[in-house]
Amino acid sequence: MTIFRSLPPVSLPVRLGVAWFFCMGGLGIYFPYFGLYLKENAGLPGMQVGLILGITPLAGLLSQPLWGQLADRTGARTRVVALLGFGSAAGYVAYLGSEGFAALAGVTLGLAMFNTALLPALVAVSMALVRDLGPEAFGRARAWGTVGFGILVFGFPFLLENYQDIADLRAVSSGPSEPGLELMFVISAIWTAIGGLIVLTLPRQGAVSYRAARGDWRELLTLGPYLRMLVFTFFAFVFLQGPMTHFPNLVRHYGGSLESVSRMWIPMLAVEVPLVAFIGSALARFGARRVMGVAVFSAGVRWVIYGSATALWMVFGASFLHGVMVAGLMVGGPLYVESIVPEHLRSTAQALLATVGIGLGAGVSNVAAGWLFDWGGATAPYLIAGYGAMLLALAIPVLIPRESIASSGRGNDRGEG
Image (cartoon, rainbow, N blue to C red; front, side):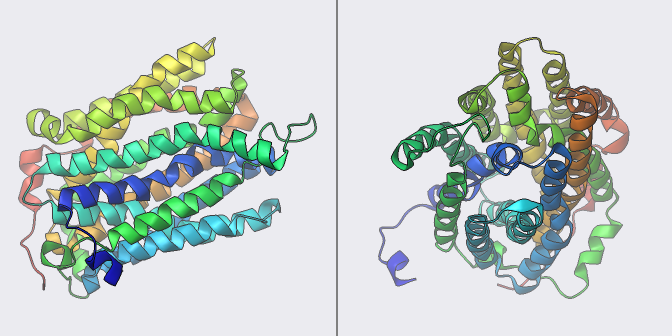
C-alpha cells in the first residue's frame, strides 16, 4: 500500500466516484453481451442460456448474505469490497478456454460468488462514507459507475473490431456473427481489478468500520417495513431482470447487430446518469414509494413496447425509460433501506436486499425468460413481464409503507471504530 500513500491527496467523493467507475464499469461488457456470447459463440440453446444466466443470481442467494455478514462482523467493509473486486477479476479470466455447458456453468458459479456481492457491498461502504453529505452525494458517486459502464458498452464494439482485424477473425455462416467475443472477459477482468485497487484507498475508520455482534442480523427480521421491501423487491426483479438479460437476443430478433446492441445503451445511459446523480433530491421531495412506483411502472411500459414493436427504432425510443427504472429502483431502493435499518447492519441489510432481488427474483426471472424465449419467441418474455410490472407498481401502496412509518424502524447505532 506504499504506492497509494505516495499519491497526491484526492478528496473522498472523487475517490468514491472512481471506485464506482471501475467496479461497475466491469459489468459494461459482461452484462450486455454475456447472453449473446452464450447463444452464438458458445452455441448453447435458449434453455441452457437461461440456466447459465440463472446461476449468477441464484449463487447470490448464498454469497451475498455471507459477504454481508463478514463485512458487518469484522467492520472491514472496505477490504471486503476490494477482495470481491479481485475475486471477480479472477472469475472473468477463468472463462478463457472454457467450453461446453458444464464448464461455462462452473465458471459462472465461481464468478458469481464474488461479483454478485460486489456492488451491494460497495453500496454499504458508500452509504457509510457519505453519511454526513446527504443522499445526493451517494447518487453522484453511483452515477460515475454508470459512466464507467457506458464507456465500456460503447467502446467495446470498436475494441472488438480492431481485435478481429489483428487476429484475422472473420464471421462465417456456420459460426458466430462476432468471433473473438471472449475479449470481453479480458477487459472486464482488468477493469474490475483496477476497481479493487481503488477501493483500497478508501477510508477504513468511522461509520464504515461499525461492527455487529453475533446474531444481530435477526434484528432485520423484526423490521416490518424492511420485510415488506424485500417482498416488493423480489417481484420487481421477477418482472425486470430476465427481459434485460435477454436484450441482445431481442435486438437480433429485430435485425440488429452487435453495434445495434451497443447503440441501444445510448438512450439508456443518457437518462440514467443525471437521474441517478439527483435521485436523492427526488426521494426527498416525492418519497420512496412514488419514486419506486414510477420506476417499476415505466419498466413495464418499456417491456410492452419492446414486445409490441414493429421496428428497431421503436425499441430504441423505449430505451429512454431504462434510466427511470435504474434510478428509482436500483438507487432509490438501497437509499430507502438505509433509512430504516441500524447502521451496524447496513452491509447485511443491503446484501439481503440484493439476495432477494438480484438473487432469487432475478434467478427466477432469467430461467422463466429463457423458457418463454424458446416457447413463445423473442417478444414473449417482454409482454408478460411488462404487464406484470405495471400491476406490481399499482400495488405499491399496499406493499411499501410510507416513509414516516418506515423511518420509525431504524435502530440505534452500535459499533466499534
